[in-house]
Image 1 (cartoon, helix red, strand yellow):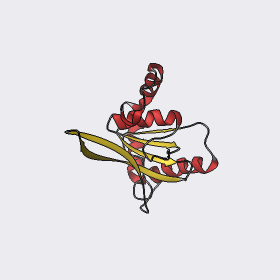
Image 2 (spheres, rainbow, N blue to C red; image 1 turned 90 degrees about the vertical axis):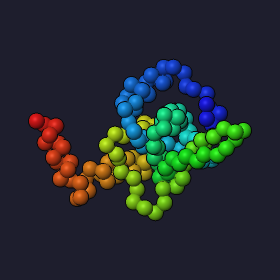
Image 3 (cartoon, rainbow, N blue to C red; image 1 turned 45 degrees about the vertical axis):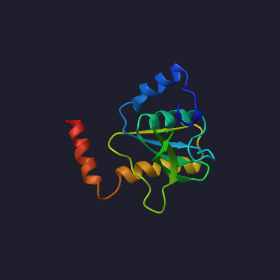
Length: 145
């Protein structure tokens, strides 16, 4: 298993997969990035690792630094085998990310006020921007039909 982590016990895997995670192409996580820049702390870390192992794009809001990170894969040759290494890179100065059509949002129930505000902002950036409000309205009308 990558990063030296053992797989979670079976019931944890079932819980994660049962909550819509399986169909998501992109995962937005709210948790604490470890100092190695490759793994996330605690239970959120297990879900992030599962997403990375499945080839999903992961965006992480680090609750410690209050900054966004994006997963990035690099490949190198090791003992005649190609090895994939995933790390989290700072999002930078561009506009913070928005949800994609098939996204899962994960996080701890124990979040601080700044993290709760960023969760709110993520949904606001996605659904309340002037350039996409008409599309959201059409989709809502389509759901009511």
